[in-house]
Length: 167
Image 1: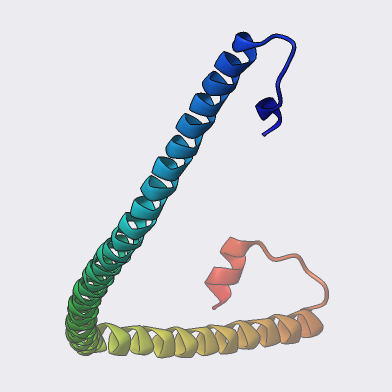
Image 2: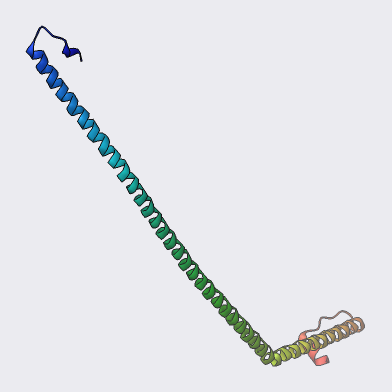
């Protein structure tokens, strides 16, 4: 050390050397203690890390198991909803078939009940056609008589009363 040489300050230099040596020794002791604490901390950290990793793995497995349970529960719920929907669709189809069958039966009954009305309408139509044909024939004959009378008597204007009397 450089303070081992005699200095012009004498005993003061020795005292400062001793104080510096003392501080240096304390610093080295503190560094050794810090190194030991860091070593202990490293060992403790490794143990903590292993414990932490194990705890994380356990928690991960727990979350994974809960997620799987949740997924299975949702899958069961979906399957129940599918079954219920399928059952409702079958019931709706059955109801639709029943309604269609009843509707067909009701239409058939209405058709059968309306048969006399259809036959009556047909008879009325045929009667009107015959009546119209006879009316046309009668009008044609009357027109023919008028033409022959007019041609034989000359052009006269017969009143409707006179015409009825001649007939």
